[in-house]
Length: 271
Image (cartoon, rainbow, N blue to C red; front, side, top):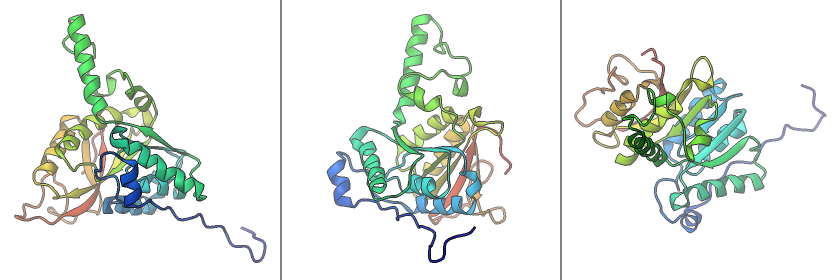
């Protein structure tokens, strides 16, 4: 492309995350959201190597924390729309929004990026509400037929579930028992086929072997929701290099922590 002599293509300002003091001043509960974790950087590198997964797509990020991953995707990989979500509890959403707005003020181009509340406990609240309605109407299933993708959204969940997401992303979201139990239930609702003929997938950067039994229980909970998962990065080497058909690992006595990128989908995936 022609450029006037002496003019260089403009480089967008770097994305910056406010420091720990700012995090403590904004939030009332300090958890994992005040830090950029290595898994987010790994997932960003994965998408940079495969930009077509993001470009032109409607993207939802779960547990966005600082906003590091979502802001880089918005700035560099041209999604049609990207919504970064966090829970309101502890003002986690306020911290995420503060980082996004600070980067906007610094000139980072984030025209298609939004932030929104998404508390994973809404899934449980919705299920309890359906059970109560079912008891009142004499239907054991709360009036739902089939559950999962067919279940009717209600309450604050409606805005999220009514969108035609084409890609869901997240990094290091399983670090306690609550997250391990709730994330698969949330994905069971999100990963439906509204995003097109291929359905919706989540690319999730996960640190394996961080907590004893969490990986096993997490993969079992995904399968219980009718979800499939495959290791997208790094490519497994041989029979023991990645996840087995049931999420089994190499069988090492003291396995090393490592970050993998998983593709999670409702439709069966080739392993």
